[in-house]
Length: 265
Image 1: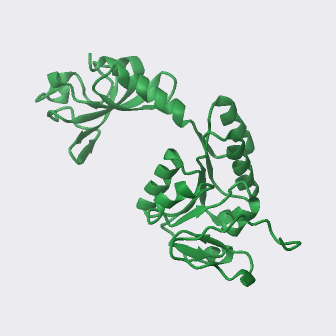
Image 2 (image 1 turned 60 degrees about the vertical axis):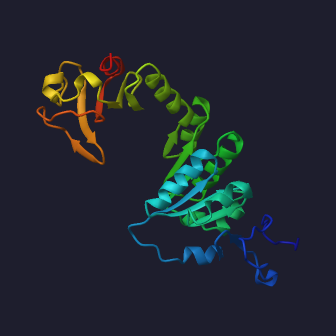
Image 3 (image 1 turned 90 degrees about the vertical axis):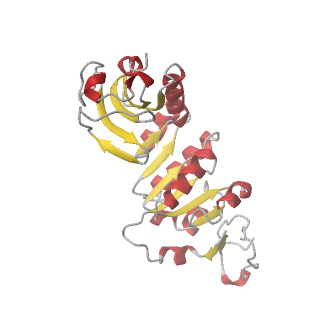
């Protein structure tokens, strides 16, 4: 390595791209497009879009990256593993194989100019924290980080991450609530004892109105609030008590966990 040259990891090349001109200075080649950090920073991005960097392309990171891209945002998806990066070709704006724990690599990619960064690294807690610290140091305006446990989450909060998510704990809570409630399709915890559930209308409620079943759109017989009624691709917010229920309808309700669970009993 030339003395004084930046510590750039092994270059990764997209399929069909030739070797870069090594006399042109440091360059990172990403799948689908060859860019320099200055070139990416100079791109014209519509104000309706956000520039998002997703670091760590396991199931969580890949899912976040794909969905954000489908929503119309510019997404740079970064992972050390080329195997994890390749499946995202054509599904994100910039799939990159590189070491995100290197500040030099992040700077080369222009990550410091992103609007949002999502640190989705799972098992490697040290790398997760290191990347979060680097992003915070670089001045990212909004950082979402994945926590492995409560201690890890507290550390990320102290670092200054704007939002800390606990996907394993949240999945466990959803599974526990769905396990003994066959009509519950999805659960979101709001507090330790209060949440929002999507519930398939029980067979005994079919062809009845909300009023007849005991629901009136506000806390009533079941002690829960009906937030929405979903039928096929349509949804009615704050449904009228006289709205009828059909087989296959979905109710979105909020309330104490034990009261929500009683709806299906």
